[in-house]
Image (cartoon, rainbow, N blue to C red):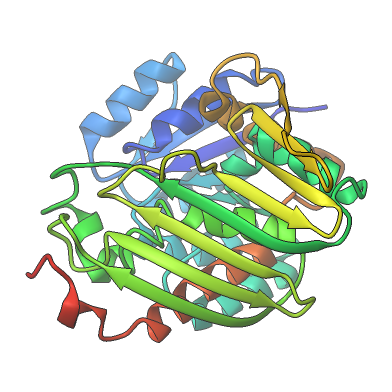
Length: 340
């Protein structure tokens, strides 16, 4: 099939990993244009790609001048710019791969879902951790009935970071849309949805700020009840590592448990005292490989006209959990140890 021609909107930090994903799929997809307000960012990405990309500082101008040379866009912009870029891409009838989050407003997210349907294009939420070997294998085991009917899911992603975000766009509520939950915590949120596979019934949130000089929270604990009765928990932080002896994912069903991280999984059926441990190969770093698999999936969805693993609807639902959690946690700043 003909290669998908992509334009990258945003050439900053995360685009580095997206470019690596592109380079891992030279027969499926190629980058033909870059758009960023930073010439230095575009220079770095162009060199990484091997050169030859058209460069723009305004995506509207890019669509007007070379729209016929572009099949899709890869949105790697700061959070507050996602919505505007998506709507302009929809007007131009381009397929869309969008980094987390879809946008930072739930009404806007609903309009995006509707706009994608009206435009008839492929929209894929860039939920790269769905391609982690442990996540894929755990989903297969769950769907095959190995732990029976799902009852409880825990999904977490924590990092001990010092002084990284103060003064950046991530420290500002208007550009970030929140704190750690809408950023790093977005990953465990969409993983939770992937496993629960149901609509959201209720959301509770408990937040704090312990050490990051940001407007939002640097630590969040979230509880979700789904319409199918499944109970979910999310834990994420920028000031502490994952609690010792815990895992990125933990699923409990009426017949057993599955838990693990990256490319390691444990399986503990009811009645057994020790879990079975096994490796699910990722042929390298699970994180790095996930972007390559994600980009391949995006290209295949366009070429074969199939639905992405997570489309616009899942992008909306992930944001729904995050924003409902934020509303429930309102007032947390009064008792946060870190004061602004």
